[in-house]
Image 1: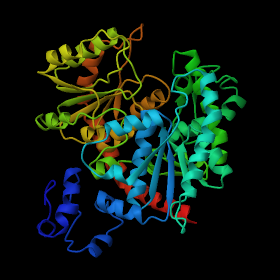
Image 2: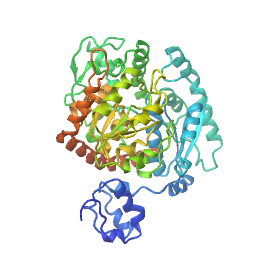
Image 3: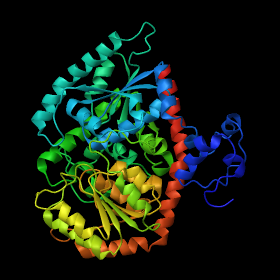
Image 4: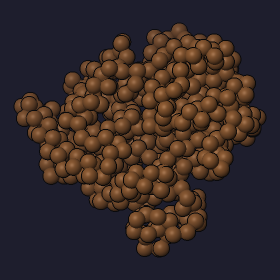
Amino acid sequence: MRGNQLPPSLQDSPLYSQLGKRLEQRGFGLSSIFSFNCIDQLQERRSEPWYWVLSVPTADTCISMAKQAILHVLVIPAPVQGHVTPLMELSQSLAICGIKVTFVTEESVKQRIMAALPNKGSMHSLIHLASIPDGAKFGDDTKEVDAARKVMPGYLENLIKKINEESDNNNNNQINCVIASAALKWPMEVAEKMGIKRAAFSTTSVGVLALLLHIPKLIQAGIINEAGIALKNEMIQLSPNAPAISTADLVWNCTDDPAMRDILFKAALDAKSVAKLWDWVLCNSFYELEPWFYNLIPNSLPVGPLLASSRLGESIGNLWQEDSTCISWLDQQPARSIIYVAFGSLATFSQCQFDELAAGLQLAARPFLWVIRPDFMKESTTNLNGFRDRVAHCGKIVSWAPQQKVLGHPSVACFLSHCGWNSTIDGLSMGVPFLCWPQFADQFFNKHFICDVWRVGLYLEGDENGIVPRDEIKSKVKKLLGDESIKAKALELKEMAWNQGGTSFRNLEDFVEQIKC
């Protein structure tokens, strides 16, 4: 048997459409599958790395399971896309396990999620969307953030009381566990006050979380001062066997905005106190990717890569509506030919930097798919419609893309990324090499690991004015796509991600069992 061809015994069995196609669509080699004519034979192979992909029930089955669920979990992200996305992925994975999920966001975020839901599909029926009044926005000053922290706990406590009061006589609807972004302390405090089990969810790498918890020791060792500023530029290790990191990559200092630096460091300092409140911390990573850090984090549990949208074929939790026409466009492109360009949900570019990137992509002489959000430009001078017309022969522009589908598409050759953790884990899981262009916070830490530790990418360097020039983009594209060792390492990490993914999914099942206790 070669490539992705299914064995005849599986093709002819009733399992083919339900199970076999899922593997085909995800690019799995099927040489390890022999003859399975019944579910029992499949379950006997539960330890195989591909089993967890096959075992995902349909959305309708999940809905039926959720209606009969005896566990009810409340999930609370911070009100930004980088937190909403992975926590929605986690929510879908919990629903697959038969858990009832209520996903709580601020009202404005809920409205954006609802507006961006796909027209068809039933996965979003699994997850009840609830809201609390809006608080402070990302980037607001410290006073507004502090004010929001004072009022949000009351909103959440009232919501939980309402849900529990409306529960049936068997208590099947009462909240058993609160899962919140690790950046949010107040949901943990509310859950503790109400006697509810608590899990934090880290939206960063495990290494970054370990760094945040290590801050008191960094201050004590004289590496940073009480304001978080590095006292000298040096390489440090969080544990004896861990890769060294530069004090220049400390996540709270990677911004030019002093006010934002202050907010980031105060949030980083909160990590230690949040850790005292959680019963578990769930990490969107897998053990073999970052094995050095788990012993530094109490009750940490790797449950990644969280790719529920990819497994279920439906993406929910976006704050922008996905443009699925990019997938049909990718279908028409040669294998391993496309540069995928995306900078997440917060980064913005000046007109000068935008022009250099556009010119660099055209000089690279490769077709590209570029995600340009409506708010991507700092100045609103660019006529994107005119730009689309000019590059139509060599590229496609969309405002938001189904990223997991894009990165898993055979036509994609590399990922020009801001190196946010969601994008990093997506790219690693799909075996796509990186061109790294970090913007702020933990993205520089992630860039270091992508380029220097995992060695699956190259860094785009700016000039003396901080602008990445077109020639740098052109040369790094050529260098990356000609580097066979980087490509091989990327595929190796992909295999590791999917193999470990089975372990992570079982970790999630174990987590569910612990909630029941």
